[in-house]
Amino acid sequence: MKEAWKLHECEKLPSNGVQIMYAMDNVERNAMTWRLIIRREATEEDLEENHYLEEEGETLWETSLEILCCPFCGKNLLGKKDQIYADHGKFSHGDFSGWAAKRQ
Image (cartoon, one colour):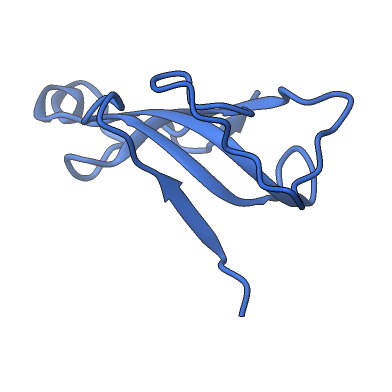
């Protein structure tokens, strides 16, 4: 059975708000890709300022970028079967801080 997703974990990866994940990307292309994901989660202060938020740790925004190598340790993440696209480097940004999420 093929893995649905996997994480790249290295010592140089920041401990909070950053992940490197290999998963199906249904936003930019219908394929498995390595992505750098940076997200900001709600704090208690955010809850006080924004009545749309319900709990700490809720995602406020998330940016996802296709990558070939880990930007922190430099490791090549691609396997022999991974496809490199001519337009590699697509990204998406989602703002989830309001009543309706916005994709940019």
